[in-house]
Length: 182
Image 1 (tube, one colour):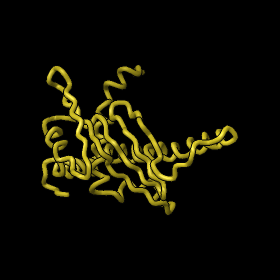
Image 2 (cartoon, rainbow, N blue to C red; image 1 turned 180 degrees about the horizontal axis):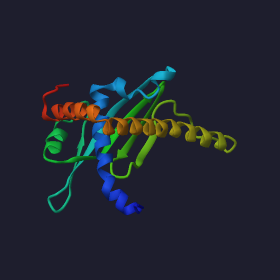
Image 3 (cartoon, rainbow, N blue to C red; image 1 turned 45 degrees about the vertical axis):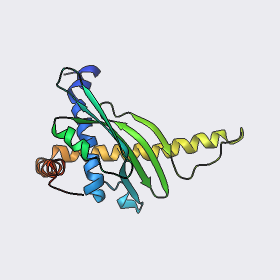
């Protein structure tokens, strides 16, 4: 049976929303569970950046709520998730060794937006250095995409394992309902 791209997109779109919710939960409550480079002695820290976009569907017209913060929690986001909202987009900060990357990740199509390395920035390259700068940018971006690939694979393994999924769903439900405090 073949699925065309539109049918597959509509049928499995929920996985992206679940993935973003899991990333948010795991980055706060189980950071060691998502340590991408644990077996090769690299330090990785993933945190939620400064915004989360919640989309509430089912009311005829989808509602979008963008929650921005400066050193505060996302308690409002929990209220919208309880009402049936999904995390449509999340701002993430990946710290890989001494590099820090900041970007937005969309749940419906896994698109990465505004990816930038916020540490170790170099001055603009001269005409002789452009090729090296392009290769360095490609390498740095591949670090983030490799980490995202690993995290999604890890999420799918959890999602498909009944016992792990039930345990995780319970923990995330408690977090959203406020039973598990920061």
